[in-house]
Image (cartoon, rainbow, N blue to C red; front, side, top):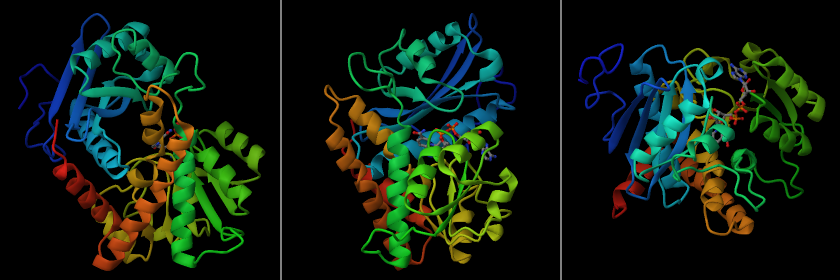
Length: 365
Ligand code: NAD
């Protein structure tokens, strides 16, 4: 248990259901700025941990702890399967980004990142923009996903993420239905894209260009309108996205959208999307399999962003090397889907096991 006064509700750490042998969890408090934040480092066996910082008004401290632990483990697995010399970590700031964000707060977060001494490298995530990370960079050099002066790098990993998801989606569809020599296998195929933000909108464009029939939704109506105007995709209400007669479902908004309530509603036989933590529970991996739905594990197909960030951090950005690395995303996915079919297991369980093996085999730092 943490000492009293550390949070609103007593939290247990070492026996927390999501603890999973994290290397360290740093609790940060700064009275001047009001910072309350956590940095979780799951593993640095493959290299320094890298992961975004989220700012969310969590209902209590345990919700923040649960989120950061789950996300940092996911980053370890993502980096391992993407073949990056990188570990997994994540951070969260407890607070409402619309109401509580300030330059002072971001600099205080930068100082907390600095205290992790390079074992954690921070980037943007929900509620935290590139500009916020630039502010943190005033206090620490352990930042990623920021513009590099005098270079074409603007720090945004979304184009690479979207391209990786697109290539994974096409490869998985070809695996299920055969390759069309004309490359037109997605022509007329129905795809439901949930969320058309930075990644979703780009995915919609790839799909429309390939001749797919695309339904979209977004909780923010103007975002859906802009995507529909740019691509001709058909807008449906957010809650209706599970019910459209799509062949493929592409979650590109939130986590936990694949659950006991939504899975029976899906018409799709394939799920491939960018959102993190799509399965509400581990059982939903088996629930999808039992329903005859092929699930492409989220952190496998959305690895394009951290692959791009890895290349952004090299002394010289090499776009060809980045694209070649990105092309391995669909290869890894197909290996996982083959193993899942051969072993009659859910693809998420297979991906987790493969990632754990890779991490365990690393010599460590
Ligand atoms: P974004 O914030 O630009 O877009 C998300 C969109 O989803 C927003 O337009 C939002 O209004 C919408 N949305 C929220 N709740 C919704 C709901 N209930 N129904 C429909 N739409 C809803 O984020 P993004 O960068 O496009 O990322 C999308 C997802 O992919 C997130 O889960 C993110 O964590 C994950 N991801 C992103 C990257 C990246 O490079 N951007 C990398 C890996 C994973």
